[in-house]
Each structure stands twice: as structure tokens, then as C-alpha cells.
Image (cartoon, rainbow, N blue to C red; front, side):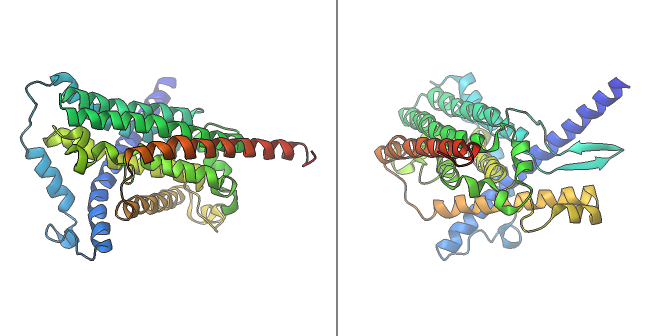
Length: 356
């Protein structure tokens, strides 16, 4: 009996992993199409129109082009590390989605199945650990290329991610003080009651710092110094071609997707439907349909953040490197520390019934 339950649990998790991975890849693929369309709208152009209706087959054409390109490995590079770099970047991008609650639960074959791959009680720490590993893929790939421009791009990426992770971590400490948990699922459940229960209301400054750091972590404009084409040719992936280049490009879009999912879960109620009592809908339509609506609501919120990433890319110019470092060390970290101290002080006052 126990063996049957364990086997059912393993099958559930495997199916969920496959669905989440395939969905992430599909959304990342069509994020490239959306990026071109958003750029075209902002620049008064039409964007992709040739491959399929409205250019919807353009990502497929791009993927096939990369797949059939010649695999080139430079003669003086470290071959094993050259291949390991993009694989590690892709793997860490995919691993972060394991702790995101995509919905509440579904009911199949007499079992309640949670729509979360791993409900860790230290979900936030897991996210930070995996995101920190992502820079190793960039660093290994850039160093193994044996190209000075690639190495400079890798060094920029490493220093940028280390700098902005500090501010991101401190901004989340204030959120952890408010919620009292490290589990992302518990944070989402706490925000279910009303839209004003969302953590964006309690921690607006923390969210702003987290959002800016998320742009830096994803190497997105205005923080795309590691691949500044006017300075470093192609940045850390200058020497890459074919699917290895595809892995680096894809990992960026998957990072955007997962970062958006994390921000929505932490600050915007996750799969919570705003202005509507979920319990009343649940009684009328049942668990499975409710789970489907929850997933759709979460994806809608994520798409809003993806559009924000794209809008910023085609609106704000790239920083100089000294400006990037100044913003991280001299502005964001002090702001995050002030936010943490003010939050701690207010919580202490609240516990003492607002008596000094």
C-alpha cells in the first residue's frame, strides 16, 4: 500500500515537472516573439509577419535555424567547460520554477494533487541558492571561450549579480519579518483574504528594490552590461553558436518568466483572483475548474511583468558600468537596509500595541 502511494506521488511529480518545464520553454519561446512585437509597436514598425499568421511561427523558425547551425568550438578553448557553461545556465534557469505554486490543487483518481513541484519550508533560500548558481554558467562559458571580450562579459555578469543579490536579499528580509515564513506557498495563502492583504501594500519599497534587482539578475536592459554589443562584440557568448548559443539566449527568457512568477507570488497574491471571493466560485464550479482559473490568473499576472521587462528594454538606455555599481552599492543596499529597519521598528511597535 505504501509503495503504491509513493509510486503515485512520484508519477504526479514527474508529470508536473514535465508540464512546468514544457510550459516554461513554450512561454520563453513566445517571449522572443512578443519582444519583437513590443519593439515594433514602440518603434512604429510591424515586427515579425512572414512566418505564419501574425508571425506566430517566427520562434519556431528561429529555433530550427539555431538547431541546424554549425557547432563551432574554438581551437584554444576548454572543450568540456565550453559545453558545460550554457548547459548549467539553462539547468539553473529551469530549477528555480520548482518552488513556485502554480495553483492550489486538482482532484484526480481520488487524490488531491498540489500544483507545486516542491513545497519547501525554505523556498526563498532555495531560489537564492539556485539563482546564485546561474552566474557559474556564464562565468564558466566566458572563461572557457579563451576570448578577452567573453571574459570581460563574464566578469561583469559575476560582479553585477553579486552586487544586486545583496540588495535583493535584504529587501526580502523585511518581507520575511511581515509574513513570518520562508515558504512561498504559505506567503501566497496569507495573501488570499483580500487584495489589500497582498504584500505589495505592506512592502512597496521592498517590491521596488526587488524589481530593480530582478532586472539586474536577468541581465536585462538597462543592466545588460555583460552582453553590451557596442563594447564587447557579443559579451560572454561571443564565441558560441548553434544550440549552445540558443541555451544562453533561452535561459535569459526563462529567468524572466520565473522571476516574474516569483514576484507575483511574493507581492501580488500569486494565483489569488483580486476583488473576488475564491470560496464562492469554488463551491459553484469545483476544485479542478478552480485550479484552471488560478493558473490562468497567475499566468496573466506573469505576462504583465514580462511586458514590463520588454517595455523597459526599448525605453531606457543602458547604464555605464560605474553607474550600475553606484546604483547597487550606494543606493539600493542603503535603501533596503532602511526599509528593513523601519519594518522591524513598526512590527515592534505593533507588538507593544503602538506604545513607545
